[in-house]
Amino acid sequence: MINLKEIINNCNKYHYIYINKLTKVYKYRSYSEKRKDISIKNKEKLVLIKLKTITKKLYRLEKTSPIKITGGPLYAEVNVYSIVDGKIIKEKTKSKNKIYFPKKYLKKILKNENILCKIIKKDILKICKAYIEDRIKQGLIAINKITDL
Image 1 (cartoon, rainbow, N blue to C red):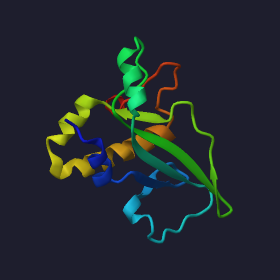
Image 2: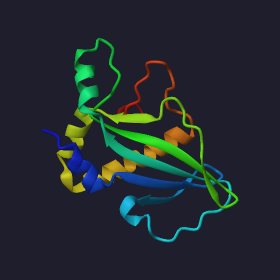
Image 3: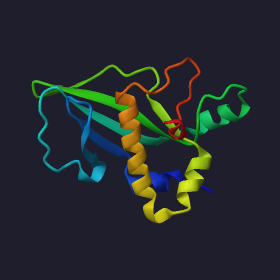
Image 4: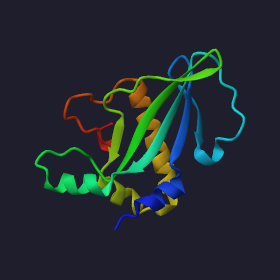
């Protein structure tokens, strides 16, 4: 059985990625490292990615529903903030800002627990890059999975 809370606690729930004007990732901080001093200039973006689990109610609804609405038990929620004149302003989120980690994928990466957080970090950077470059599907019933990126 997959212990999702343990994955989130070990690999941190919040991840901060700083992006410069050329949409290149140049700084990465997890929650435990966020208190370090970071100088941010104007017109740079701050991407906050939260790891979350789906609720029990949504899980039960998913089992009985003929249309799938989630892609897995764990997902990353993406929020983008712009820095203008030293103030942090939250940008309007796209309709699809969740990327799911399917159960099969989680089982596969859990086999090697020594590098689990490194894999999650790489996935988070991949999610950030795909979101900024508009490679995330925005269709009505689109379910974005990490395996599709």
